[in-house]
Image 1 (tube, rainbow, N blue to C red):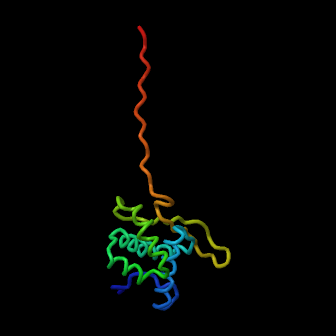
Image 2: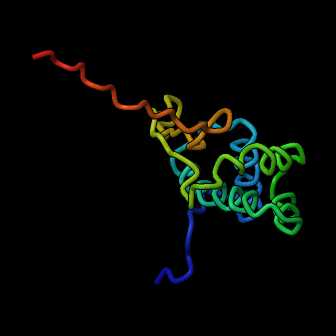
Image 3: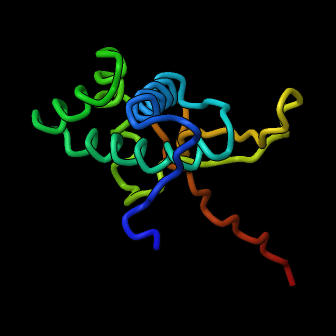
Length: 138
């Protein structure tokens, strides 16, 4: 039985796998879009979502927890100042996985992981007032 056997091993021991995930999540938050294998992409989605949730909390303990996981202090400050404010109204699901191609060298399925809202702060769209129909003269 596979009780409490969540996640993929990816052919690595625990320390190597944890370091791999930390590096991938740091790169994702730094560049906001990365390409990796589909299995790795599926694994890091939840971790990246948790980091963004910490950024939305915004308090000192959350910043310390994010800094303990992420590999670059500049990415931690970017997470709290730029990335998290974009998702204030979104309750979850901050990442998107797009399957792209099959890698030629080993036949691995590749995927792009990206943040759902990219670039600058999302600005609300202007709603145009309905145009009035021209009056017909009788």
